[in-house]
Length: 272
Image (tube, rainbow, N blue to C red):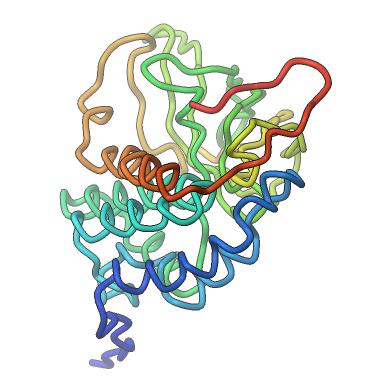
């Protein structure tokens, strides 16, 4: 039997300490990103090079093996220095942590975990606009479905490679359902708009994504649940990763950081 050896990517220093080092660099450009309305792309490149994108992934699959508390500490630390980086990175982190959780429960998540580690694959959540209910419509076609939807608050969309999303499907037998599935950012029919411009968090890249008859193979549907009804999959501890960065924001404000208050024309969308 051939055994593939995978390098241990667990750091010698704590994740939080390493995040503080990176954060000090990120802080230098935090206000500039907000003033110019530019995504923190360079910060994500550094997160990739330092192993943070796969921090939650098990070393068995090439990741860093960070614990839940270490992930939250990392996000809190980053938020002290660059809130936009912390928020957009937290969306990827909670999706990765969810995959780890499902893998431990027996779900077929190994392939995704390996991709995150090998490719530095950034996941994009559309959960800010989809919760118990969802948005969009799905139509049954040969081999799967087509989905047409407009999803808001897709943080880190400028660098993300896979959307983890949902949409509504009117099943002839079961009635209206919500289906969960991934969509590659490069898939035909995917359009990412450059419409994010929210004061104080302009660097998160939380743009709207539009799905225009995007094909979703049947085998890619990970979950089906009743529309507008609570499901156990929605109650997971990993979602606290979403909130962890908010704990660091008051420190960022107290430290005297000043974000741009430049004037703007027209109505502005607000962050979550």
